[in-house]
Amino acid sequence: MGFRRVCCFLIVVGALLAGATTPNAGALPVGAWQPPVTGAVVRQFEPPLGPYGAGHLGVDYAAEPGTVVRAAGPGVVAFAGVIGGAVHVVVAHNGGLRTSYSFLVAALVHRGETVAIGQPIGRAGGRGTNHDGRVVHFGLRVGNTYVDPLVLFRPPDLSKIVHLAPHRDPVLDTTSHERRGLLAGLAHGALHAIGSAAREVARAGAFVAQFPLSLRPELMRLIALGDVAAIALLLDANSPATLLADTSRTARSLVNWWKSLRTCDHHAPAADGTGGSGHSTMIVAGINSKRSADGPSLAFPVERLGYRPADVNYFSYRDRGGAYGPDDTHESLETAAMQLRDQLRAMQRAAPGRAVDLIAHSQGGVVTLTFLLFFYDPGDHTLPPLNTVITLASPLRGDPLASLAVLLMRTASGRHLIAVALHNGQSIRDLAERSNIVDAIDSARLPGQIELTTIAAAADFIVPASSAHLPGSQAVDVNPHAPSPHTALLQDPHALRAIRAALEHRAMPCESFGEAFTAAVAPTAISRIEHLGPVGEALEKGSQ
Image (tube, rainbow, N blue to C red; front, side):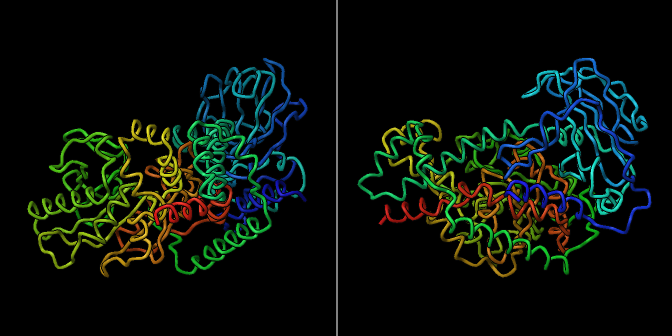
């Protein structure tokens, strides 16, 4: 069995095992399904090797424009509308299953309508990326995970395995949720292009670090000029040692998930605006963020965490607080940490003794930990009481992309590029792997009363999950189904549930097997971005 087929099998099994419950008497038996059209399958389900790998999350049936498309099984229409110029329909079925019918020219049903097996739901003929109007794209989700939809029409007996999916009768999620679910399955072509480019850049950086110092300037010049594809071809990323290390890391991650089931909260409450810590909060945004005089710096639903508007403060990358722009976020992180100290002192003066929760995204998490390590004294009564600290997709162990940017700064063209784009990028230098600040964070201990929770997006290629956790922190991985997991994390229901648990000092919510599997495999799939160890070594040697 090939590696791609093994990945497909494990994803299907993981999705069906996620949230396993007692057998569902209402599960649909084999024979209660039929293909949406009578045409031949012209493209099979192709599970990607990673979140940015090539793949096809569904099957394409040949269908001439105008062909009637029928419901594959009985259920309720969860979505019927236009995305990207084509019509799409989603039907929710018993057992937590959803079938999707994409690239239609018209829908014959509406949201909330109950449909029978074989009932007309649309007409073929819509166009989209890699779909020419002569096919119907048919998908199947178990929970939020796409699996091969042909499993509906062939052994193994679905009546024996469908009950292992999350048990629920057909329910209607929000329209925006259904749109996100569809986009997660249809956007792989664009994501593959982005991921391929990022992997090529990372491979080139690793390749440069393998050469003697005397040869690196010319190779780095090629990177700065953008000629990375030819360099990347020279790097063999499939060595036995690499595969062994990746397999070992994946196994350790799944073992840790299994152990966590003993202590996690199987019934953790959602972030619905109730509960909360009763404290004030300081929200610290990341690089290239901005803030108007009285507006937020981050699209983050603090109200769902129980905070009142008066409880919420937004950190400013300006000495006197208030409005700031993207350019202000490129300063030294030590400077930003001192600004955070001063703004917390202002909160203490306004409400003496009121405890403050620190919640930070991306670079903001590194700013927060720099403050806690270098500028915070628990005995300093000019500062408010601090206890709960939560970082979201923060490169606490360094950002591989920042490391590559620092490498580029050593070339004339690279220095010019960074100077123009990032105003000399001091914060980029501070975020790079093996920088003084990152080394200090990685090796130091936080003050004893600080409870640190680190939350990462498993498929985040901007800040890989392995860079977002520290030893001793309460680590959580989530899997937002969106083109940009780095920012989608801020709205993700699983992440918000974990944040609420941290604020209320509860056990963390349990992860399903499907979520744990993705969190274990995704970092391996983007290991060329995650692990630029050779680049780190080159930076360390170059600084000596």
